[in-house]
Length: 294
Image (cartoon, rainbow, N blue to C red):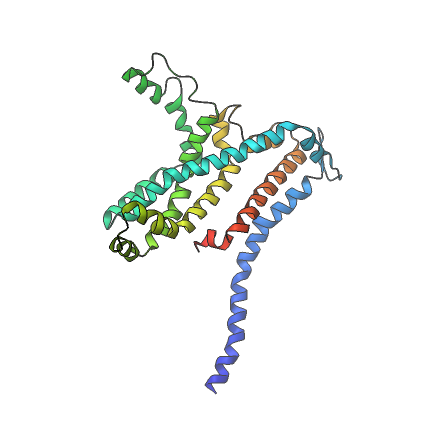
């Protein structure tokens, strides 16, 4: 009798699990799928000085295809996003390795220090670089005081380099944290075993530590790349005309020219290109391994 009761309880458990999935599925449909569907549909609408209508047209995509500036800015966005990802990896991996090597209260203290700047607004953290890199900013003041330069440098702001600096600073946490989690879960006995077998520190790192931390590295790289592709605030405040990214082309279509249909088409292009990048990555590495750490 008890066995029959257990068998009968299995469908009930499955029904309960299905009910638990419903809220998450509704949330995804309302806030992820539906906006994308509306955005895709709007990209085929018509915008004029009188507003946006649902009249079907391909003119928005023709404008994008005919004007090479959109393609150039898109390539620049992908290049900046890739460079920011690599720089974030160079900065984030040593930080993650250092955090994983700490023990006891020290680790907690440094983790709090890592998260501390991110308790403030994204915009505030970007604005901080204006008084630091400006003509009368901190960097110029220090260089003048040390005698390295004779007059303030004007090229520290409003260029592609400033965009790189701001994005690396903003997204370092998204690179450091997954790498730290991979290193923290690593079995330390493997490092001891490598040392017992005669491997030096560098060989141990490249043959043991780095391969075991690759899920965190891949996860951090994908996250930073995706976030950098959609960046708007940082290039808007720090990049100027030479550091402009695709988000800075999309936003004025909604806020200045009131051309929502073209803005939607540009957004669709960016989404499709980023999705294709994920597809290319997924052909070599399972996305499941990236997002949940293998």
